[in-house]
Length: 361
Ligand SMILES: Cc1cc2nc3c(=O)[nH]c(=O)nc-3n(C[C@H](O)[C@H](O)[C@H](O)COP(=O)(O)OP(=O)(O)OC[C@H]3O[C@@H](n4cnc5c(N)ncnc54)[C@H](O)[C@@H]3O)c2cc1C
Image (tube, rainbow, N blue to C red):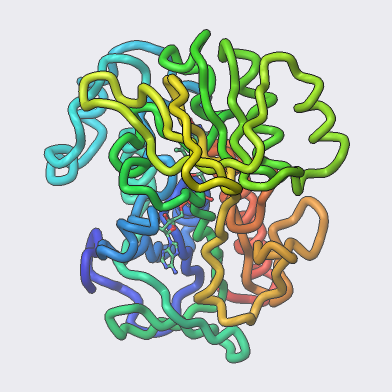
């Protein structure tokens, strides 16, 4: 089994397969493993395509540096703890500990290790096709492996959309972000001018949130009117700290290796020759997210925005009995590590109870 934490002990049908590798998947695995369900996590493949999309194993949180809002990790040195908690084989490839609370990659490695400690098996591959019409369900992986499982937890997350500029990529974690709630309070953004790109509800939310910390927020939008709901747009327009740059796009993020982002170049969408440079310390892309649901081939009911639909309030049930969804793949609203982990726990409990009700152990 490529990239597993151990040899497969399940040549036949599994009880529960968890697809994904963010906080939702690992929380689900920890609960399922402790309930003796012997879960298999299919954590995603290490491919160039996944690197470019931002969907490598360990999920969205592994793409960020400091995580200051996950309960239990107050500021302080964790180096020794990390050395003792995480397998040496993986620890040696992790970035050095920054000496301040916990980083995204560290938190994700700890979650993964905790799942492994309770007997979770891991397959480092992408699920490319599912068959939820058959029971047990069938899953096909990129490398050709086929697996059968009585229940499935989909925790494949949603990736943040960026404009696709090479300069955005260059300054990720050095002033470029796609999550104001996550990063807005970091020291590098406080009392500094920032820029937000977008014109929908998320852009309104992100710029309003950032205006609490920033000296000025420039909101760059390519049209002359927002797509956002009127109430949210009005809130932005009434906010004295937010300056809207209408009919404009960011065509370059400016900066240096030492300082990270120092500005952006903004070009008019009406008069292509017209451009200006804005001095900012941070750039926030707020142009939506893409849920990782294509591989489901339309076999689960999705929302308009292609997120998996939870069919029962406060449960992780999907439109197919025995298939559960957790984390950002089913949540276009909260999108936080703690909420993803919380719904991962719920999905494992839902799966366990469903398996028991069907007489599967
Ligand atoms: C820049 C940035 C900074 C952030 N900072 C914070 C923060 O400080 N605090 C916070 O609480 N939240 C933060 N977030 C949000 C947080 O990362 C997400 O809410 C959380 O990671 C969602 O977890 P998840 O388990 O639903 O999925 P994800 O973390 O998105 O992980 C899903 C993973 O599943 C795997 N996968 C996808 N498709 C397949 C498939 N077909 N087969 C197999 N595997 C697959 C991929 O590896 C994918 O990355 C941040 C997000 C970003 C983008």
